[in-house]
Image 1 (cartoon, protein in one colour):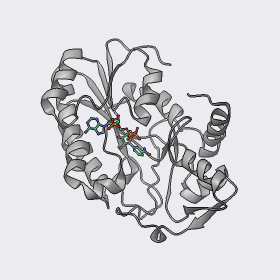
Image 2 (cartoon, rainbow, N blue to C red):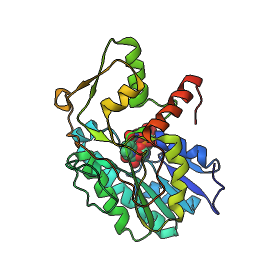
Image 3 (cartoon, rainbow, N blue to C red):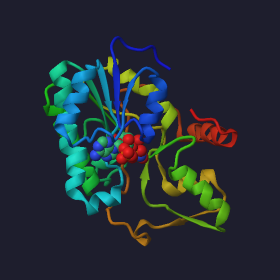
Image 4 (cartoon, rainbow, N blue to C red):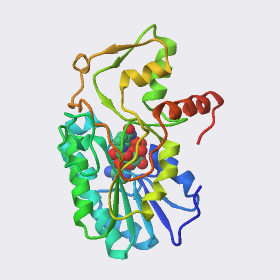
Length: 273
Ligand SMILES: NC(=O)c1ccc[n+]([C@@H]2O[C@H](COP(=O)([O-])OP(=O)(O)OC[C@H]3O[C@@H](n4cnc5c(N)ncnc54)[C@H](OP(=O)(O)O)[C@@H]3O)[C@@H](O)[C@H]2O)c1
């Protein structure tokens, strides 16, 4: 838990995975879920204008990568244009905005991306999040963009929990071996996000250290994971081959193996962090 900064903290997307973890870090925060529609500019301005927070975290997003291909207009509206509306509303009252983005703003044709590399998304979700980043940057306020990837945490319905569940009921669990990125442990990410508040305006990368495939991570979790190629899976959206986010600006997070050990301990003891 961090000492409450002077003034109110407001979390958008507070019912999502990251929003819930962040709410544990800021017990006094104003929590805003989907009851306030992100694409409703009047509603967004009203909630930000009435609470007059000092700091806003925007964790709200349309995060289903394949569904974004089917609903590109919704993706652009929620992840792109609405991020700009939030940024403008924050700028109007002098609030700092910490906006959450993704490794999928990158195309994945190299082994890693720094904070300074230009986005080159290959799917609708990535394009919509890249638009959101551009809108936040051009709104003229006090902003930080934090890119992260492959979130997992105790008590969540995520890749890690799905692999564990499938492993118990199936003899083998097929997992993609040719897509690499970095996993990010939600309790650690949430605890580290307040650091960017005292960092300069700009883009930051926060993930656990070490690049690994879906299969490599799954194999560390269960004994019966078996490798398959991405092209064998029927998915609407293209995926980057390797979208690892390289952190060159902040103190590194722990390795994904250390994070996974803590995750397993918490899951087995049913501890929510
Ligand atoms: N999950 C990952 O592995 C991952 C990887 C890289 C980056 N990120 C980024 O990290 C951030 C948080 O992701 P997450 O996994 O915590 O997301 P999540 O669990 O899908 O939660 C998203 C939140 O946004 C809300 N929301 C969605 N559409 C909305 C709309 N139109 N109006 C208002 N609220 C809306 C959701 O409410 P409802 O559920 O009620 O709709 C929920 O509270 C996002 O910016 C995402 O792009 C996530």
